[in-house]
Length: 394
Image 1 (cartoon, rainbow, N blue to C red):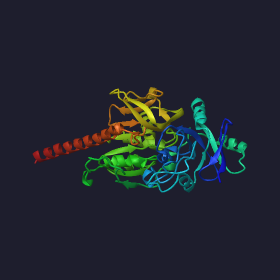
Image 2: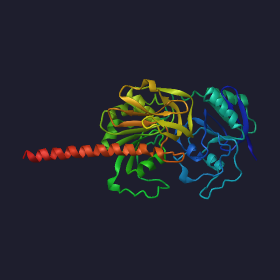
Image 3: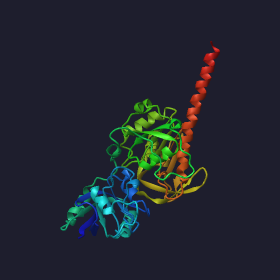
Image 4: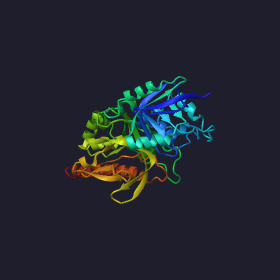
């Protein structure tokens, strides 16, 4: 028997539906995601912490859930909103239905509401606080009051909340590797230290596919601790919340930029890279959440269809003289990529590992790989020249 549920927005709007997850109440920033597939990856993306995700695709849950599609060990959004839940999940590897997955993850969710109407409201008014409340006797006034108490994501440092508690190693490649790609021997692997601000497993898998072994470190790890690990490059991961309060990450990145280590940041990592350069970030009206966002490479003019998940952006007008824009959104003109002119560091706002189809943006990982190899070659050449000088002086 279905349990009633309501979604209350801070402006007083009420949507009625049915509970399809855990019982109880939840609050968060209500956003919408336009992807047609990948609901399990969305639910396990730490970048959605403290957000209630509305999926615009009308049928959600028809492929169930499977361990291979997890991007992290748990569900991170504060809640889920969908239009229709199919009666049957049809997918041979699935081991759980979506409601079972949500209930086990203690996530409150609602189905049976007009997600088109909700999405139009969010586009017009911007992302706003909301509350999902379940139960036979739901107090709608209390739900609206709870929504209005949510403080919003501006000023909220969530990277240190979702990060790993301790460092760990990662060497696992893609679950479904590309055919024809030769495996890379372990002794040839480049060493990447990856900051975990809310890192997704597929990022680590792609880096492994490109011949890297990863030391994943907590968000508050200092630059000195990273350098002590002897990396060939540093990766700044995706993550939730406002980047500006992450002063620990900005300070560490600023120090790492003073070295010759290649630095690559995506999503929150891209924003932290921008802040470390002296630029500023802004809160977007409703953010970018989906798998159909056109982004232009400003150097080549090519347009890529990308996966996106962010509510903040680097303000391009505040970039310093030594940093240039490399990519721009064709939806709203916001900055999507940046690169330093005087050091091997660059960032991308979207999620290049979450390919909506073609793997065009894997070239960003190739670029990171190339910068690390070039640094190694430079160090090797300098070592050889030093050895020759020492031999000639004997």
